[in-house]
Image 1 (cartoon, rainbow, N blue to C red):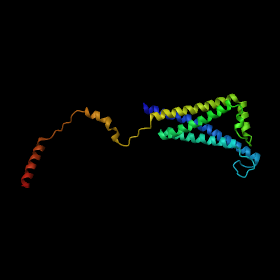
Image 2 (cartoon, helix red, strand yellow):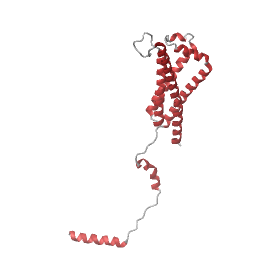
Image 3 (tube, helix red, strand yellow):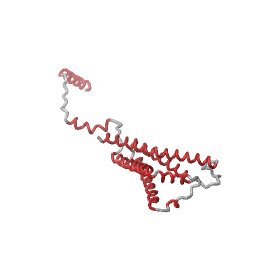
Image 4 (cartoon, rainbow, N blue to C red):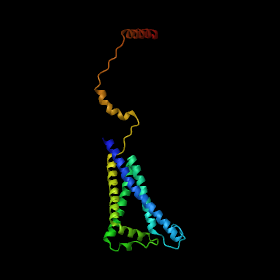
Length: 215
């Protein structure tokens, strides 16, 4: 029963974790599009050190978050497949850090009226476009954000359950099963051996002859 439950939790964790991976891929693709727009506008990639413009921090941040989401997804798949305690602990730490970062940003946006001043000016203009998109599609973005946070919370809960269930039990030899078979051997009926009388007398005679020859 525990083995079936563990396999079910592993499958669900992989499925839920894939949603985080798809969100990370979407962020990376959006960052690639912003890099392409920057290259067309400025004639150079935003990663060059010789650029006369300030670095587009929003592109860097979005690309970095997408990469972190993908790394967390890979770690989650490894942890779900192996059910290793160390991998599960590391995965839970990363998910908790992501949730704390998202909670801090949400509180800063909704509580602080001048939250835009907390961020530096973005020379690429992508940050302003992103803000305008969220404002014009607030309801959709709100539900998408809640769905992503719920998925992260569910993955954290599944990882905790899988950690409580423990890893798989692998048996390399038959010695692991010996304690389970001992009670059956205790209840087994006694075994009797039937010996041919002639064979027994033959052995006694041979022992007598051997004893006389040794003397």
